Structures are given as structure tokens and as C-alpha cells.
Image (cartoon, rainbow, N blue to C red):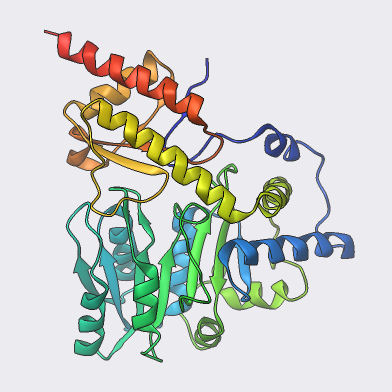
Length: 359
């Protein structure tokens, strides 16, 4: 019996999307395939709320984060990283790996950065060339106020604003162009509800000017070739063809449904889950909680995750490291509905009662 995925990715995938990946291979270097890719590119612009190119890579979410660093910075540059958890920390680790000087704003776990702290850092460190942020810090479930940050950073012409929207894309409002965000990265296995393996990087005009300058050494991740091919409906290297077929179908579904309607459904399901958790005496952990990811502080978190998996066949996720002993996360990304949430709440309640009765 397979387990229901209520983690933060991979997610439950709709049947028509699964079926789209089962067709025979297409050859990608044809005029017909370029037309398909151009439609995919246009629908990605709709999802990212941008008129700028959205580049497609065959890699993981961490891969596309590295691509953002490689194309935003030069050797010995100084950057500002908002570090509120595992994924903010990942930005810092990637930058340090390339010898970039990192200024960090460390945000307490479960809290969100005060945008004015970013302004203070930019004023104090005029050498900063990029600000790396996380829309939805999935390690805690905290949401970042990207709109306010964009309004601040756009006043610093030398600074790029880079946003990790790997788990936040689609479920959270994100207006790339209106909010002055220069680079937005995401991947396929979260709210796009596809298998892992595709990643996306949207680049503003300001970011395109930066990446055309001397950037960090990379062959596969260097964006200039992707950008050139984007304009002709191609990718520089062999794409993940089966995944692109699934992406094509998923984007068509999103466009037909309307992204605001999808966000509304995620918001309703998230409230439904959190109301159910409150009845069990549990509250959402994050100070400013994100949509579709709910962090819960609870004793015996690792044991709860184990029982839910082995007895009730529902996958939820502990937090990483020592924090996982008393912190778990529930995801509603992908094909999850209120019936699934009811089944989860029932199993969760029974699991907690069972653990209380253990000697």
C-alpha cells in the first residue's frame, strides 16, 4: 500500500498529469517542439507574474538556487542573505562555497524578517550586490513579506533581489514584476505538483544585464545560453522531455482554473487543517504562517511521523536535525482535498492518543 504524501514535496500528482509523462519521446530540435516550448514559456510567465524570461533547467531546487548564485555574483562579491531556517542557510552555504562574502540577517526560527533590517544592512554595506531571500521558509512554515522587501531593494540600483520560491510559488502571492524581484527560482515537485527534476529561474532585465557580465565559473548553470535559446523556443541542453510534457499539461490546467482560484483553494484547505489541529489543542508554529505548509511543535515528533507512516500510511515530515524531535511539518501541496485532511486529522489524533498510552 502506497503512502499518502502530505510532506513538502514530492506531492500527490493528478492522474492526467501522471498520464502525460507516459507518452513516447519527442525529438526536441524541431520547429513543432519549439512552438510547444514557447507556449510553456508563456504559461510560466503567467505563473511567475512576469514579462521576463523564465528559464528551464533539468535539476533540483538546490540546483536552481546554485544557478541563481552563479549568475548573480562575481568572485569576491558581497551579498546579504536572510537566514530564517534551513533554506535561508542553504543560500549562505552555496554563496560561501563560491568564495562570496556573506552578510547574514539571522531570523529566529519561525519568525519572518523585518524588511527594514534589510534596508539597514544595505545602507551599512554599500558593497552588497544581491539580497537572497526565501518566500516560504519550509523548515518552519514562516512567510516572508517579499512585496515590502522589493519596495526597499529597488531603490538600490546595484543590488539584485533574489527569491527562493521553491515551495511558495503558486500557493503564495508573488508578483515578480510589480514587486521588483529580479530573480525568482522554483522547481517542479512542490505546488506545480510534478515529479522532481525540473527547475525554473525567472530573470528580470536588471538580472539579465548582470548575468551577461563576468559571472562565477559554471558551464551547465551559466544562464546566457539558456536566455539566448529561450527567445527561439529551445533549451541549450537536452531537456527532461517526459517532465516537460507533464509541465505542459499542468500549466494548461493552472491557466484554465486561474491561479487566484488555486491559491484560494490552498488557503481554504490550510485553514481547514489548522482549525482541525486547534481542536486537538495544537497551534501553527510560525509567527506569520505560510499557505499549504503547517509547522507544529509537539513532543515525540519523530515517533508520530513513524506511526503515521507505518500504521496509517500518511507521510508527514519532521524538521531537520535535533529540532525534528519536537517539530513536524504537514504539507497540503498537490492533489490533496478536505477528505484527505479529515483522514489525516483522525489518524493524527489516534497516533497522539496511542503514544500517550505507551508505558
